[in-house]
Image (cartoon, rainbow, N blue to C red; front, top):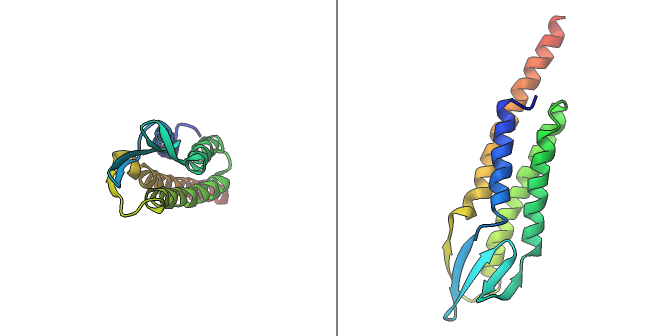
Length: 147
């Protein structure tokens, strides 16, 4: 059902990942030059240093999968499988973000911003949703046994 607590967990996780599309992840300085890192890439005064299409693709895919999970409420086992896959993607997104920050610069000074922890918060919310879905599945199976 859509009004269950796991739906709220998944919705807030989708909201957090959707916010990543608009917010900056970090600012970094290298060789006396300042860069801003967001979902579109790494920029220095409107000049693109690195293209962020892989990051953008990860974020869009994860957000869409969260919304797909919300509407799979009649298939609880499939919801759990999708959420496990989303958790793996979120951890991969965190790795890609860190890789992009440190790969093309020599000893950059990085200032992380709050949106950098959004994927990890979404992992926690997805885990809580998996637990709640599992409880629902146990309840439904126990009701089938009584009949």
